[in-house]
Image (cartoon, rainbow, N blue to C red; front, top):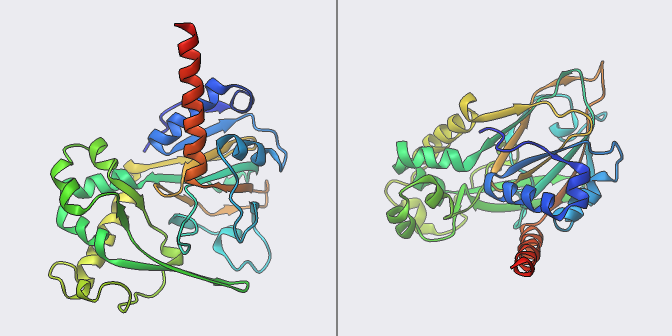
Length: 294
């Protein structure tokens, strides 16, 4: 994937309805945007989140920090490499948007990587359609057991809006096909052992949906996600903020050293309903302004 627009200035994003609308339309279309000139203040992410929608409170709080801590129980809070994943898939309703504001950067390593799973899904549809069906039907359980919490939820890797029979006949190009994908679920670090007693019993006996087919399909999907041609890599500098669709874009991080510069990201989540509500309001205001000029 690649950046599809120039970053939006923070001041314009906060103060200009037109700049906000343009940024959120880009986010809706491509799943990823950047802001620059963001004040190096911990509460800046709250102002950004409230412009996008409403902050979602989770087990990590309303906002949270990503930086190395002693005796970390989560690889995110170390300086180690962190592979491609999505957040909070062990919950029934994972947040749709993730916001990360860089308050400090390391001089060595720590690059952020992003990949569009819809692009990978489309490539699978074109190149190996039989494997795609396995990703839509095989149940995968995600699990988080830590700090007094025990979250667990089972999902298909690819969630469709409409049944398989409907979209396969209509999927003539990636844009049509992408509109029928509700969400993609990909988070190997939080994947639980496969549970064969979950879901439809008949599923496990259907031809073409065996465990071996599923393993082959995720191997192919992983290769497509991590293909250098599909990855957008950037180093978040202090004062930069990234907003991305957590149900579409997978993110990763290269290992880094804190000997020179302290990498510090402050994060927040926004639900899809709150984001779409803001988009509707912006569209209504835009239509009203156009009507007044006519």
